[in-house]
Image 1 (cartoon, helix red, strand yellow):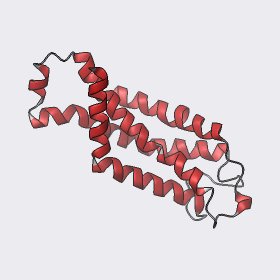
Image 2 (cartoon, helix red, strand yellow):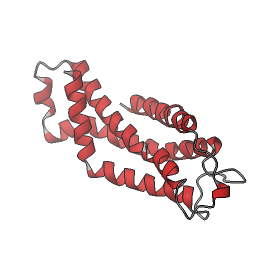
Image 3 (tube, one colour):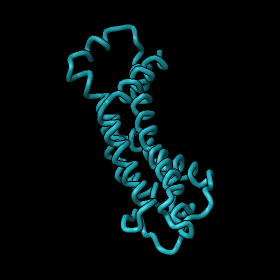
Length: 165
């Protein structure tokens, strides 16, 4: 039952306009910072735009702003059933409390995690744009993207979402 509830919540969140607006805004901000010299996220300086340090710094800074987005995704789960009057009906069924609460939380958090994937994607795609000076780019290191996404952005978002629930 846990998987079905988490899947339902994930599908619900993926259909939400908030998901697509947030993903678009974060993609465009990150893509702009990776491809245009006048837009900066972080200190910039004399490093490659796709250096591991720059990738980590971008993830950390955008994760601060993403705290509000993660909270919106997860808090919506709790409020939505009670606002519609469907909460008491659900609580009177055979669905276990664990399956219901953690299934909904998991689905909402997965939606937030998927929407934040646009940040590393924007940096990666931006490194292939023809108008970017090749001397400002280094080799794309997959480990830098993975570490920054999972350890520096996703883990704090999980702690924030779990604490706010």
